[in-house]
Structure formats: structure tokens, C-alpha cells
Image (cartoon, rainbow, N blue to C red; front, side, top):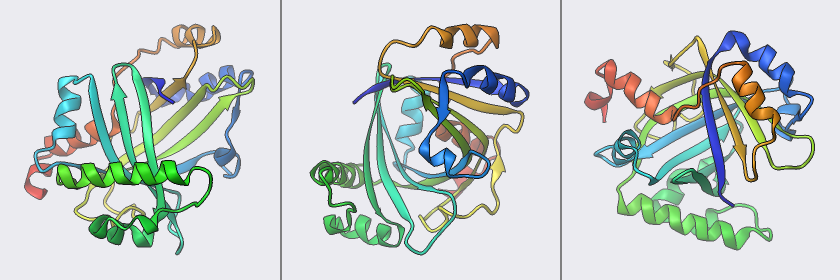
Length: 246
């Protein structure tokens, strides 16, 4: 189901006060509760065409566009799961195709389009097979290749009252250039993009609860079209590295 995402770039000094004001309405999600610091590490290798079409569509404000990535979490383990994702933006609405596979099967899946590598034979299996076919279609059609690994810590919360509202704080956003998927779980040579700021994302299906705009105004938060992928590309372009490396 498509949802609306609002993003805010804010100074990290206000994070604890902002979180304290939100907690009467929110609770940490399952994955944050599992972690000692209430946050987990998100790792995404973004893929793009040789011409960086995805990046330039974002820059141009194209209303209907896709992003393609391989996403993993926390630290490497031998049987680590990763997810092939197509994130679709249609005007203000966001939806996502997500395909779980074993990290060790990733290269073979992409090289051979082997649908037997798709994990989780549950009631969602047919949906995931369709998502896998979609991903392979775009992968081949646009000659997608790995460009940048973006890593950050995420503290995720959800509505206590079952509205589907989801709030995430993304911190210590860092990236490096990649030419393969082997570096998904690496943290070496990472460049922190904006050490003084975090990203707040508020995601919802229904109308926003009234407390959300109250806190947005209280902390003078300004909605921005924050893309971690685009910010990473721009950072490396400014440092004259990206175009020499892809």
C-alpha cells in the first residue's frame, strides 16, 4: 500500500527533546527494541544506470520515478538476509517492492535471474516472486550497477494506537563509492555526509495525528526532499571522485 513520507533535516542537538515529546504517542518498533541502544544499522547499496538516470530524475523533480537498492542490516553473519528493493515515488506517495534473498546468493541471482533464490515460501511468496521479476526486468533494461553504499543508524518508532504512523530518526549518515556488492557490510573509508544533522522521517497512510504538526511547529522543522542517495552522489561529485570511479 502506498504511503506518504515527510522528511526533515534537523540539528542533532534537539533529537532527545523531540523524541521525549513524541513518546506519549509512539513506541519503539520490534527491531529497535531488540537493540541495546534502541537503534539498528541500515546498509544500502544504491544502483543506477551508467548515466546516473535515477539521480538526475531526483534532481529534476520527476514526479514518477524509481530507486533501486540492495539493503542489509546490522553486521555480517554467514546466512545474512538482504533485500532487493524498488522504491517507487508517484507524486506524494511512496510504495516499495521487496525481495528477500541470502546475501551469499546475491551475485548469482542477479547474474542468472534464478527465482529459486527468493526466500520465504509463505503466503507472500507469489507477491515476492512478482517483485523479483520486476527487479530483474529493471536491472537488465537499465543496465543497473552498484554506485554508492549508504549506511546509517536508525531509531524506529510506531504509533501506540495502531494508526500505521511510523517515525524514524536516521543518524550518522555515511557513504562510500562501490563497484560491487561485496562491500555492503563494510564500514571502511566511509565519509560522514552531514555530522551536525540527522534526518527525521514521518510516514503515514491516513491523515496525520494532530500532535505531529504541533511538534513540527514547536521545533521549527522544515519539510525537505531529503534523499540519502542524492546527498551521497552530490558529496562525492563535489569531491571530484564519483565521475572518475564509475
